[in-house]
Length: 95
Image (cartoon, rainbow, N blue to C red):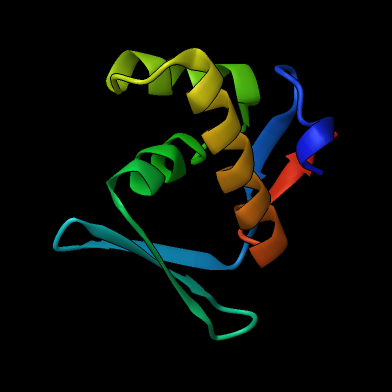
């Protein structure tokens, strides 16, 4: 999927996920599988932006304004992270 993500690709959280901030770490419970996932500060930043459907470009711009990182590095890291969320079933693509 990584090669197919473009600026206009839109992501949103999937239903059935409950999340909470526990001492600076976002913990997500997948109600369907019963699995827990933990996100660090950067992952939490992205997760909060996915409360509403968001384009890759919008997420990238938010990251670039928040963190001191090159666009190239941010783009690659964001694609990798979003793919991990997709594989875990925590987010989905909006067609």
